[in-house]
Length: 150
Image (tube, rainbow, N blue to C red; front, top):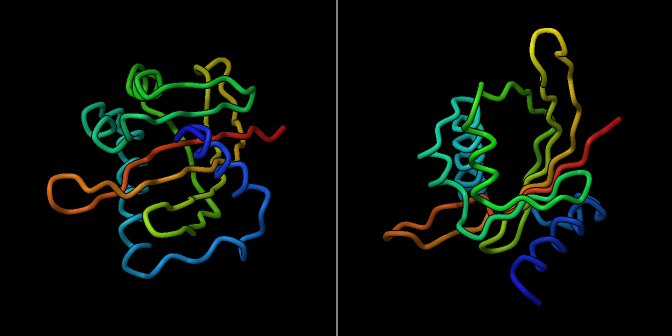
């Protein structure tokens, strides 16, 4: 099974399984993952391309609610071109195993220009992978799946 297929399967599994099926992360690991999540969030809010590129794994893949697949380049470009993203995050939960963390949360996005502005409610599953980069391990966003609530 390819890494992408494995990540896709893991994301779908995270949505289907109850929270008790995915073990809580050790406190130190949870703190590292929370830092990575906050850094990605901040880079997206500020449209900061260089920071976001550093936080997203080279083989990153995103799956949108309509099944469309987005690679790393398109993901970073979409989030750093044009006005900064406006969103609120709630119900963030972490769990995982060893070098893999699953982060689930609700996000409410504001989309459109002033005339067509509206809110879009989503449920997002992110998979972060611990990478042994330049001495100290760090967590990178490796996969994202978005479900739009109607």
